[in-house]
Image (cartoon, rainbow, N blue to C red; front, side, top):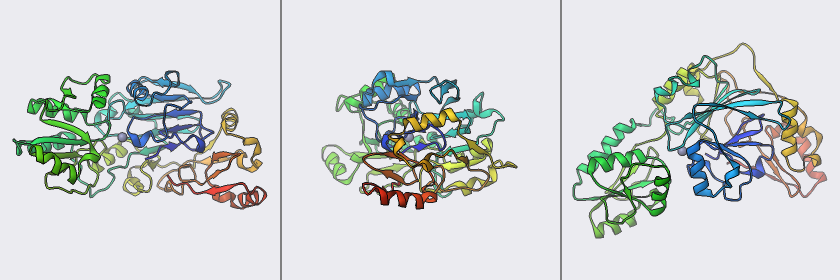
Length: 409
Ligand SMILES: [Zn+2]
């Protein structure tokens, strides 16, 4: 997951490689997991839109300048300008995605149609009094397809929590080390703390983050104060297991639905997931009935599983980028005057529809999968380069400084 440039628009979600998207004006951050923040740093100098909790964490973790962070209330629709003259607008609605603290789905509505971006654990309450419950159809659903595999077994988080409790119960004399990423699964830790009546020992930095999130008072950074310890997931390995067991009998638990090689008999991998199970994805798509689906985990095709739930329309919907928006996108692109005219010729582009899909690596609309041209003089990205091959080749001959790079993130 390295973010998504929304085709034919000046906005992007979780995409921070500025050299590849100089036409983008509006940057949205869905949540603060590291695979969604690649490229963000304290030197970031563009506006970022996110939930209020993510805004707090963003400033704490990356020290992004406060004036650049725009927290948007969850559950409300916000009007944002897409150009500099105040003519073209879109609305964005943030919906709690039940994934990790501060995480949201984005529902965009504008000249490009209606787009929903998800990274979520589905729960039916998402349709209660929510913008998703309206009759309005989604044109493009960016679907969190992390667990989109009919073979994968992903129980509910409550069931997975019970599995973890059983493992701990069957090792009454052991310390418990839990391997986690930087954010997420806090409710599991709180439940274990209360069930086993122990403090949960975390690093001082994680404790600081939990205090910022105002979580229950079950965490401490005092080593030895509790039976349950949280470490980074990559610290759960054979070497550490042997080392920990030299001091005290220790089991490790890794709550994840990802496949993992187990290198020690006391490492327990439990499919606790903050992403929707395959069945939940099916239910979600069946209720939403979008016109098309784009997977957010690239290279993991999933559309075929949902074709029976998609809406169809009589005519192909086309998107015409409004003049003022296009002007703004060009203006933001570096050195656009140096480019051949053809590259910026206004085009009518189609959005995916029905059961006809383009995989992201080949899609006309996914700049992640498109080719990029990088030079000292220019840096931009656009879709469907292949149709311009001849033009590009000629252009290269004239300007031997150019380097072509295929960038498939
Ligand atoms: Zn995530």
